[in-house]
Length: 126
Image 1: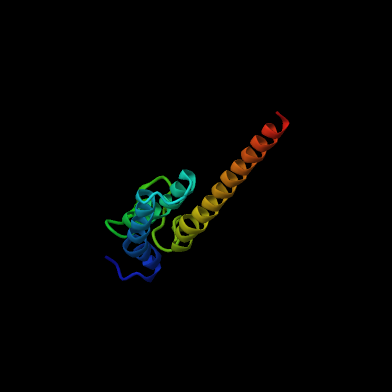
Image 2: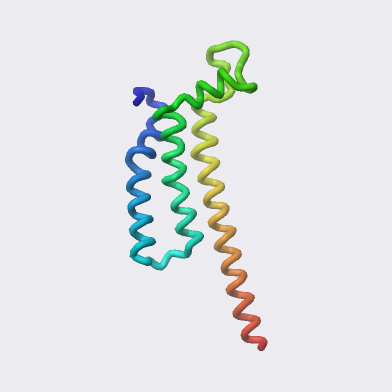
């Protein structure tokens, strides 16, 4: 694996949290807990994302190096002037995914409530 402390979140997510979340979510689905499908899918994307981050940066890893040295975005001078830094990787992969997930959840929840309200008023008018 790696001794790089900047990869702690990828190792923790991929090795520890993802298997636990997948187990809980599959159990919830098999036991038919009262969870709407869209909520279950939103929760399921989190461990899938964690596993993706693990394979991208830890095992086998190499994505950051590939992006910084072998693509059109590569810096002409090797060193600290790389387009994909540890801070950028963290921001894009953690902060952005959390904001997008919460926004989708809120939007779907709002849509569901709006449909429910419309159906209630339509039945009351009939």
